[in-house]
Length: 156
Picture: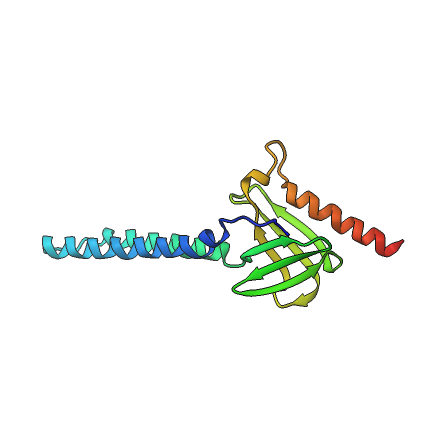
């Protein structure tokens, strides 16, 4: 099997939001200690940890719907998320979309039926899989052409 999803997914999905929350906590503690030592309340300092926590929440929201891994297994994709694995044949994929203008780039597969992962699967691709000229990912083009071949085979 060949991996299609980025190896950085777990970092963006699980580590980065926790780092932001941890940083917010550290900044809040430092600000509180500073205000206690100075003996005065500085209201503006409250906004710094709150802002950092908001960024962590935003980051977590952007990446929470990503599946952990997507692997090419010939006639199907093997999708793993939170310890659950599901094999999805290319014939079950109705649509493929990409958002390579965001960093990191993602691919969303819309399925014809409701599965364990709902009706769509979104995964992150490595930036080296994105063409330098043009917005699309090589992985996107490959999946799209394989879906088209699968559909052509069904109608033949």
